[in-house]
Length: 345
Image 1: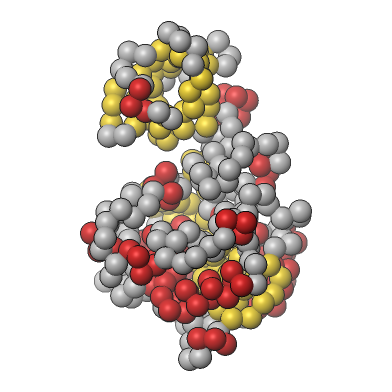
Image 2: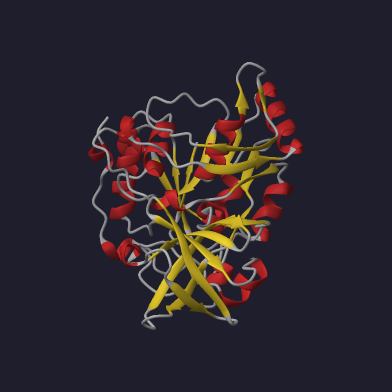
């Protein structure tokens, strides 16, 4: 298949630059993937309607990864020029793998001043990234004080105080992502409580979202695209309840594409069970993929020609997804990280 098969027209004003006025007050589109008439496959709801749209006995799986305040600013020692750093991976010994703006200008040996009397120096190059060695420990406590929320590039503004709350799920626990698992941003404690009252079981996985979530597909044929790898972990309880749900025929609803990738990666076809523990995955799900675990999906509206759009197209069918997206544009749904939600059943 060609990458251009996954494009669609999206007016810029429909790219949500801010979250809704209150968490859980977004719009919700329901897509019936078994529907035969493409023009009649969607219905419009509000996020607060979600518990009424999910059947009793469903198992919902969430990604509890927490966004690290990984964007920091420093000033070059030689010129005073301001430089932005996105810290991607802690390499130990006060070293981080980072993405820098104007990276070609940033060569090994260049030094920078950072907040809190910290200095740093480029000590190496790894592909388009740089290795930065800091003068003291840069941990999550330091980043909480001096770091910024790494908003995605299609949000054309600086982060502000409310992003620290709204670009984080209410159930986030494990720090490690450089982007939010955005499907979860819609959920409030009230919605989660209503799901529990309806005997809808919840389980958790952790997949730390990497920079690759924003990388475009640069190949003409999607089959030639190489997916980024991300670290995930599956608790023993989650492995047990997902395995039990599959054996008993209960539907498994994955909240977000990161939960989908984790579940599909951790499934042991030979044993017919979900594996617990930590691993990494480079799974690329596109049309033709046969889902082993996931029966239903809650997700956001994704960017054109992205691996995320290809994933939901694999689940619901490319034509159905693109028709639903065309309807969403006509009805002025809000798109991407701070946008509205979609339930696919």
